[in-house]
Length: 303
Ligand SMILES: NC(=O)c1ccc[n+]([C@@H]2O[C@H](COP(=O)([O-])OP(=O)(O)OC[C@H]3O[C@@H](n4cnc5c(N)ncnc54)[C@H](OP(=O)(O)O)[C@@H]3O)[C@@H](O)[C@H]2O)c1
Image 1 (cartoon, helix red, strand yellow):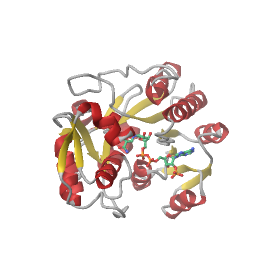
Image 2 (image 1 turned 45 degrees about the horizontal axis):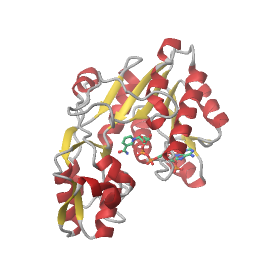
Image 3 (image 1 turned 60 degrees about the horizontal axis):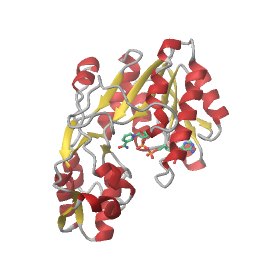
């Protein structure tokens, strides 16, 4: 299949491109820089130069493809509204380009805020609607295109899609620990984070492209919930730092923007996804990755 991938140079995107190429797909990756373009070409992908702020490049990429996988995100944590607005505009543009085609449109999403007090499942619809919602309400916006002839599928990645060289949430938490000289966890550290190794997540994306029916919500979750206290203990071991509870009313000040997420219970199940796709995660656990030095400064980008 000719697949257009936004965010193809990113953490999950580059692993996904590898999976898609190995499965025999023809991949065109969106690239906004020479470095990203060169990285994609080096692995045998085609390049479409463009940017989330250039919706013409997104539209053209979608129109030229037989399937779209949207993984790009600005991740501007100092201005989440800008990231959400760009996300929503991109999803609207891709959806509009695919109306009536029946083509697959897989988009990245997450599990934050889906449920309270229990692990989220694929049956839990996102409560986020409209431009002011987290991620610009993009999951519901995309799934709304199913009735208009677009095979939209949501890819809900674990809050930590981890591996050596990851620069995402766990890297941010580890950076706070090194800066403060203490590896903290929120409150009693009993709140949990779902986790998946990036290689398993990428394999799930390729399987989802091949097999997921329109309207499916897939959970890229290998571990249902790792307590934040265990995450902090592993970071403490990795960097030789003391481990301490951070009082709930100090979490935001201590951790900064990542505190919003680290203080949440983000456990999630993937039973439905495993059954539907025959997907079995096989990669290392989060704690194994931290213990192996995957979050040391300059850790290899090799997965
Ligand atoms: N990683 C996780 O644990 C996790 C968990 C839940 C959900 N997600 C979601 O999954 C998706 C992929 O995450 P990721 O961790 O792979 O993110 P990432 O490593 O930060 O990659 C982001 C990608 O978006 C591209 N991008 C950023 N700004 C852009 C712009 N203005 N125009 C065009 N492209 C732009 C980047 O291109 P450059 O290479 O040029 O910078 C990169 O390819 C995102 O939607 C993310 O929110 C991730």
